[in-house]
Image 1 (cartoon, one colour):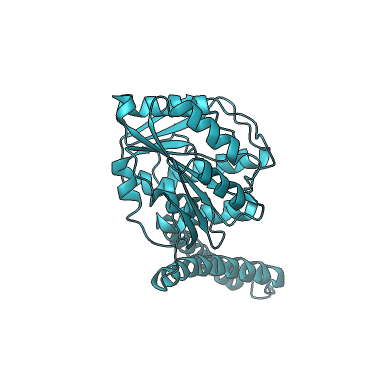
Image 2 (image 1 turned 60 degrees about the vertical axis):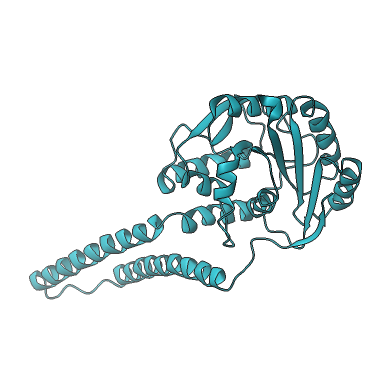
Length: 311
């Protein structure tokens, strides 16, 4: 049955000029024996010559490879959405372009997904060969996802995963400008599997994730798939309102008991700074939600495809 399945592989490409050609060749040589194969490359406006390399890969493997070059850098999740809108496979593997997920593990992932009939199968690792900063960001992301997305606590939201055709069709219904793939998956299905795989060191270059990109990703999770941050702001505001009310009563009583007691300048400055900070934080969170609503209503695109290469 396995050899009758069409397997799509979506690879967002960014600074992948030195690795993407070898990765595609190895995927084709290894997987084509057992599966019908479709590889969708999405160049996320990479500053290196990834586009030229991907075009050459398409010319070499026109029967298998599709290539789309975006007109602007939109981030990994938007680039993946561009790829998902082009796939036709029964199963779709999402993976990076850096060889940190060995091709042998791709086979293991596909076989496990077909065997278990899960909507999505996530991978996890005994040891991740990311930088300390990237691992720290992943840990924080995991904790936040447990709270905001009600993610199963023992599930690691890896970027290396496989999803079936049903889930792909549900995910691409989301056409707003701030997608978070794992949020879309978790809100759609509970039929989730996981499998342990090996994780290799990067073959070339360094991670493209910066603090700015990680914060942007977290904000997509915060504001697109949960109103908990707003409720948290409400709770903080209520708590400090009670605190201010209680402190006011305390000050009145103290002044009544000791009329000669001077009012404290330091206390006033501290309280004003504290409450101003709380108010600005709450207003900023509301502003983030309103700003994203405005951008969505203003029809900001998820991505724009400048060039398409499809047989």
